[in-house]
Image (tube, rainbow, N blue to C red):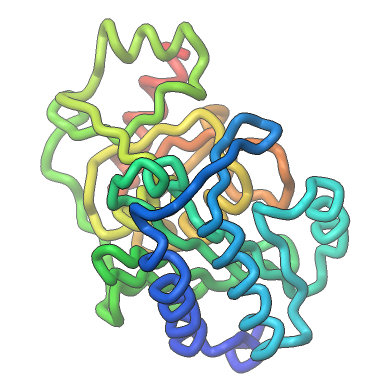
Amino acid sequence: MPLQQLPDLTALADLVRMAACEELLPRFTRVTQQHKADGSILTEADLAIDARLKSLLAERWPHIAFLSEEMAADTQAQLLQSGDQLLWCLDPLDGTSNFAAGIPYFGVSLALLHAGQVQLGVIYDPIRDECFTTQRGTGTRLNGTQLRTTPISVPLNKSIALIDFKRLSPGLRNRLIETAPYHSQRNFGSCALEWAWLSAGRGHVYLHGGQKLWDFAAGSLMLEEAGGMSLTLTGEAVFVPRLEARSVAASPDPELAKHWLNWLQSNG
């Protein structure tokens, strides 16, 4: 899609930052929670920023359709069936469990989809005031500064791995614990920010057993445009414009990503 037909990325980032600062920060540490049908946590803040961004996006770009994590699955599926339309894909509060527990690691993730691809994305961390932006073919930026990953100087066995264990198969999970190929492991609890941090070179390898579209849409383009690499555990591209969960194996360093995926496939 020609760049002039896309929303202005700076204006979009400003809109996301404003909504997060006005809807999330005042509610942080002062929020009630409930549970959705799938067991995940839902807070007042999720709904407030979801409604705010839906309204702001419609006011500024009324021709673009809107899909959110908080919508019913049948509505999400209907929106994705029209693959040629411009479509926002929003995770209004990624890291809700952290937010509800008072842990300052959560963010907003917004992507624009068109013709089966992510065209641009914004991931905003309101605690650190870090706004990661990306546009296909033009790179990834953090608060306006271009990001470009560099080869990682440590081998896999000396690496820091960001891993969400709970969605992995029992066999792979046990082998990672018993015969870890990395030096040490972290899990921060927000897929969107983990993608953004990888794009900034924070962490060496990454593994997640099952992310949804709104978890990886903006982040997958962000890492790609910064020079990193991500694949599913079966070696496919992570991004597809569908609702099923996708595994993620990634690294800011494409060569390290290949070594990581080879180990995972050999031990999966």
